Structure formats: C-alpha cells, structure tokens
Amino acid sequence: MATSTVENYLKAALLYEQEKYGIVPMGALVEALGVVPGTVTTMVKALATQGLIEHEARQGVRLTPVGRALALGVLRKHRLVETFLVQTLKMDWSEVHDEAEALEHAVSDRVLERIDEFLGRPAADPHGDPIPDAEGRIADTARQVTMEGCAVNKILRVTRILDQTPDFLAYVQQSGLKPGARIKVLRREVASGVVRCEIKSGQELTLGLPAAAKIVVGAVV
Amino acid sequence: MATSTVENYLKAALLYEQEKYGIVPMGALVEALGVVPGTVTTMVKALATQGLIEHEARQGVRLTPVGRALALGVLRKHRLVETFLVQTLKMDWSEVHDEAEALEHAVSDRVLERIDEFLGRPAADPHGDPIPDAEGRIADTARQVTMEGCAVNKILRVTRILDQTPDFLAYVQQSGLKPGARIKVLRREVASGVVRCEIKSGQELTLGLPAAAKIVVGAVV
DNA sequence: GCTTGCTTTTTGACTATTCAAAATAGAGTA
DNA sequence: TACTCTATTTTGAATAGTCAAAAAGCAAGC
Image (cartoon, rainbow over all chains, first blue to last red):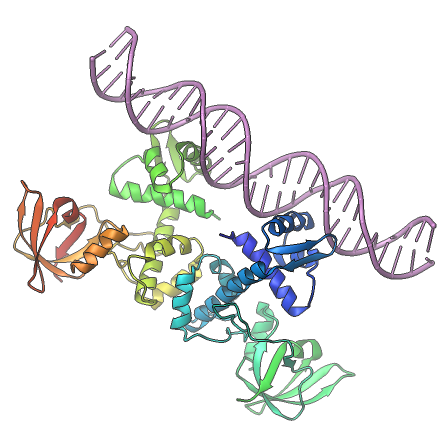
C-alpha cells in the first residue's frame, strides 16, 4: 500500500505531465512538494526501485504504467472529494483544495465508490477539472481553448478554471466566470494585453491575457 | 499537530478509561494498538514529555486534561464519520469502523463541523455510542443498564451495542436488536446462563449472558 | 576552451515509529 | 525467604522521510 508521501509524488508527476509533456524535471517535484532538492533525489530513487517511475539521471522522471494508474487513482479521489465537499457539504470551492489534499489519502476505494454514486458519477469537479473514472480513463483536455485564444463574438460557456489559488478563484467567483457561466469575448487587444468580454447578465468585463489564459471555454450545450 | 499515531494512543487510553477506571496499564495499549510492549513504553515516554499523558513507571498511564481533550476530539471525529458513512453513504454499520479509523485523522475541524450540521448534530453514532460535542462534553454512560441486568417484563428500547466486532454486529442486526428496537426481557436463567426475551414483532429470542451484557437498554421514549 | 550559474546528486545527520530479544521489577506462592 | 510468573523496560537496530550543505554536471556565453 502506497504511503501518502508516495501518492503525493506520483500525483505531482502526473499533473506536471498533463500540463507540459515528456519528462518531469526534479525541480518540478521540488516545487510541487515543498521539499529540498536532495529529498526529491532520494525519494525518486526509492520510487524507481518500486517500479512506479523511471528516473533518468540529471534529467527527471517519467511515470511507469503502474505509477500512472496509482496517480490517476489519487487524482480521482482528490477530485471526487472536492466535488463532494462543495456539493454536499456546501463548502466554499476556494477552501476545498487543502481539505481534499488530506482526505485523498484516507478515503478507501469502497467509500469512494459510495461518494461517486451519491454524486451521480460526475465527470468534472467544481473547478471543471475532469475526474478519472474507476479504470483511470480521463477526458482528454489537450486542446482545450481558453478566453485567450477562443473565437470572438460567439457565445461560449466557461468549462474550467486552470488556476486554483484561492485569490484567483475568489476573483472568478465574484466576476461571474464560474464554470457554467455564459460569456462572449468581444475583442482582444494584444498591445495593451487585455481581453474584453461580456457576461450573460450584459455586464462587460476586462481581464489581462494571463488571467484569460486560465479560463477554459467551450461550446454552449 | 498530533500525528495519527499520537491520536491513536490517546484515543485508546480514553476508551480504556471510560470502560474500566483509573490508570491504563501498558498492556491495554499494547493490545489496543497491536504493537509490541517495548514500542508502547517508548511512545508513552514521548507522549509524557509532550504533556499529553502521565506515566507512572511500571503501572501505566493517565491522560492529562490536554491529552483527554485531544482524545475526545478524535473520538468525536470517529463517531461522526461513522454516522455519516451509515446514514448518508448507506454503508453497512459493520464495515464503517475501519473506514472511520482512517478518516478520523484526515478530517479537519472545518469539515467535521459541516458533517455535524449536515447530520443534524446527532447525539449518538449508529452503534449508540455517544458523540462528544465540540467542547468535548460527552454523555455519561457510567450506569447504563444492559439486558443482563435490566428489569424483567418491561418494554425497553435498545440504545447501544457495546461489542463492535463485525460478527456480533451481524448477529445483532439479523436478530433485530439494533438500537431503537423495542424488547422485553421475559426471564433470566442464571443456571443455564441464558436470557429469554421478546422482540417487538412477537418473536422470542434466547441469548447467552455475555451477549446480553453487551446490549444496553433504556426506557422507551 | 574556460568560466558562470543553475540543477541535480551526494553525504551525513536527525525524527518518529517500529521490532526483537534480553533484562528487570513486583506480586503472589510455596 | 526464595521462587516463579507476568508485565514492563531497556537496548540495539531498522525504515521512511526529511534537511543542510557541499560536490558535481552541464548548458551557455565569452
């Protein structure tokens, strides 16, 4: 049975792989796990001998199929727990991340199955992040479009928030850009670096390009 | 922040104190925690220097007020989580103990408060064990009466099951003696060591004295 | 080709928790 | 009083995960 430390290393590697591609540099794990570099080297070696990752000296790591399956299981727990905390226990979506971080290592598969059923087998968590199914399959998010690059003058739906720091989530909430919201990008001003858009309610909103790049949109259902 | 090992030692001491009285012998902790005696001695010393327990050499331990408060918090988490798993997630009451054992160390006070509210601030868990309130107050169960010693020919209500091994719980469930059930003790045969009783449904049931001693009964509300 | 600077690795040490096995203290008994 | 039995403690060692700080590797620029 993997310890929660092991689970955290694998999850961090998976999230990095999903965002960038290819090998995960040691520094990425240092950052994600908040430990010193030497600790990551030590831990990575242990994980490699357990067959959970492959370690390319001085390069970084890659998940093995076994490691990836484990990481996907942890990610599934994390996202289902988050959904549960928001939907059922009515917690604020900006505070559930840390709670889920602790609970993901304590929830058994049996309890998880109950939660999944209770929630009606949701496909995404409150931030719009896709939830892997029980077999570890996860919706492909490789070419999702954000407000930074989407079509202009077309009504679209917010489907996902890529930055989950409490500050950004608070901004998203307060400006009405939560997943599900309908928006229309009016124009993009590259020179000044802003995106102008209209919210369903008719209000207009201006946001910077980096912020716009964190808001994924899709066709209205 | 107490580790989950620390929490387990404190909880074990508290449960022993509640059932017996006075000092908790080292052997009780050895048994409850499933470790070798030397481990308990080592750990107990560490706990004592942290001010969580007092250690009387070659005698055993006693919780300090700080240690007891911590233990009550863990017990509260355990019992609320159990209640939640049974009532909300519809899990079987015989399987929730181990799940709660893991979750009690991962649930934050914030999440616990939500669960408590969601459940309507229950006073007892599915086995009838009293749930400490947020300040650590717990219903006094010192002179609860069991089917082994209760009045005869009087309709009473099962309020608590003291033995929570899966086997016993399965028996209780199948014979209709779950908390809430109405029963009447018809007679006690000390010589043969059995208790004869009647279940609400009219059926009669015979059980041995040790089993009867594990079923707490009280006045019908 | 050599220096700079960043990333990664090594080394040595520390904490928390555990076990195995030997030593010891006390309580009760002969 | 001496003896025995059991509970507890001591000792030495192991594992998982961590840090600090020094060493090493490597890419980029001069």
